[in-house]
Amino acid sequence: MEVENDEVIIVRHIPARPTCFICGHNDDNGDIIQEGPQCPHQCGIQCLRVFNMVNLSENRAAHFKCPACMQPFPVDSIYFGDDYLSDNSNDSADEEYQPSASVSAESSE
Image (cartoon, rainbow, N blue to C red):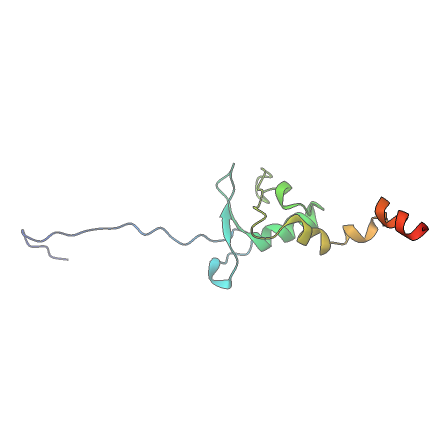
C-alpha cells in the first residue's frame, strides 16, 4: 500500500468475535457467548448449561463452573432463571411434593 505524504491512514483494531471453546461456534447460532468472571475462557450459555447439568449435576445458574478450569462461571438470570432450569431437569422429579399449609387447611374444612 502506497501512502503519499499528505495522506493519513487510520487503523482500527476490530476484535474477533467471541467463540465458545466447547463447541467452537460464535454467536451466529443465536447462543450468547460469555467470558468467565474469574477466568479468560469464553463459553456459550447453552453449552455451559448442558455441561454443568450433565457433568456436575448442577442446575442452578448461579453455581455454574467453567468446564476448562472449574472456576465459578455464574450466568445472570436474565438469560434463564433458576426456575427454568429446575423445571427442565430430572432433579425436580425426585423431590417429594409437599403441599403448603394454606392448601392443607383449605382441604380439611
